[in-house]
Amino acid sequence: MKMSPIEASTLQDYLYLTTLDAYCPDAFIGGRQPAPINAHEIWQFAVEMIYRCLRCNLLHLDEKWIISHDIDGHYGFARHLANHNPFDAKDFEKYGALYWIEPELTASEETRDLIENFHIDLSSNACEPLMERIEGSFERHGMKFGEILIPIDMEKGKR
Image 1: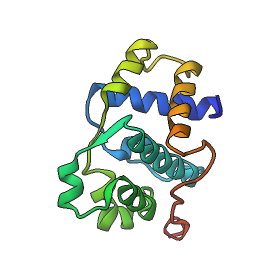
Image 2 (image 1 turned 180 degrees about the horizontal axis):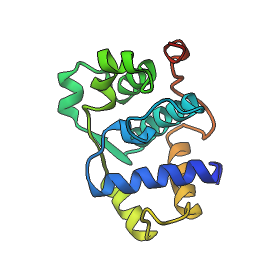
Image 3 (image 1 turned 45 degrees about the horizontal axis):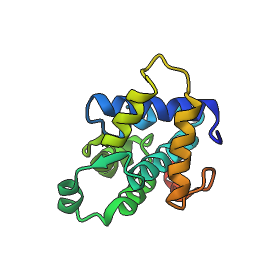
Image 4 (image 1 turned 90 degrees about the vertical axis):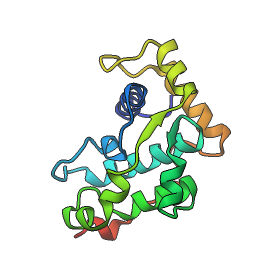
């Protein structure tokens, strides 16, 4: 497993939650909260994991929502998340909520099957075989773990 245990556990928990109900991207940063010390790392991880999971068909985003907001697919959506700091209240209220709160992410059938087959729930520790399957999916789609595909806009983080 290439992910740290914390990263693996975090992603596993968020994927599990999306098997229960639709969640907005804001859930991937821990919901509305004051900026923690590691806000940039949380923001970057959320953008990366959402993008990777969308590309690998682990998560779904309503295509009607994408079209109605004239967004250029999963990459365009992830760019919007990267350009709007979810911890910056002014940016969030003016622009960011459209991307961090309005859309809903749901688990794909593949994700539902993985979560069920590995018996995952919120009390589960990071499941290494599950994470290796997910990392393998990233790599099959040309996305090596550790490589930043959608860099966050650090200027937005300095406000």
